[in-house]
Length: 293
Image (cartoon, rainbow, N blue to C red; front, side):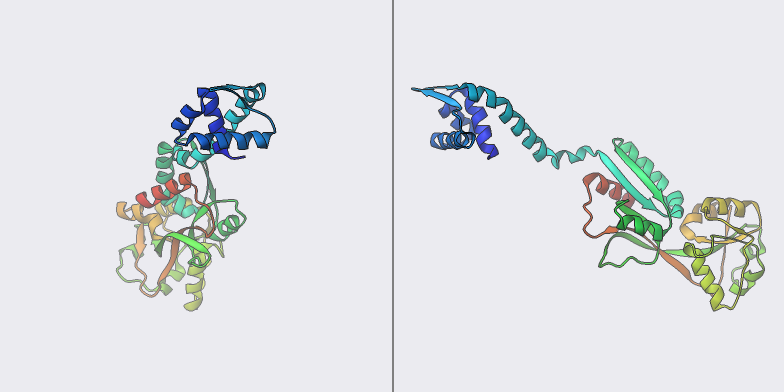
């Protein structure tokens, strides 16, 4: 059953005239007549009484008006769905490594919520490996990783930045005042590190192996914010992404240790799997990230 035939039926029913209905719809009168005939044949009933030039609904026609109206309204709503998506309602399931969330994305999420209050933003925090699994299981829509480069044949990388991993300490530590420090000199320092195998801890451990060194951390913590607070209070040393401590370095609350013989870095990547349908409200979230970060 064609929707245009239903529209024609409702127009004839309203105007009670085939000629005027044809003019309103931009059809010829014969086209209107054919469409009504097709509809009557499909339904197996007569919808209009045609007595001379007078047209009126039969009892079947009167009953069918409600069905036709509901069908046309439903199709109109369906056709407007994509257009009206600029109203931005729905859910965003967003995965992020905790370091990036606290350092970069808090303001982004607040700004997006102010602009699109009808969208519910669900933030899932985890390691890059955990977030990748969640994306593959369709538990989240996209993620901000901090790790290795995602393969371009599988992923759409919206943003990709090299992120330096640096050695950080309390400004009162003598190492903070020196322009050149050798990696081996850190072996006797008191370290606060992420748990073994986690994120940038692995980069640091690889450097230890290269230099035939070992470090037993005084404290192991998963929470980057807590690591930074401890560094500001006591004379510890840690290894953190430069972007996560940038504001504290500028304010003098933390200090970078200028280690000459190591080069540690990872990549921050905003990405989703190829084939994922990105809805308009999700695209606006991506746009907000790109404009603010």
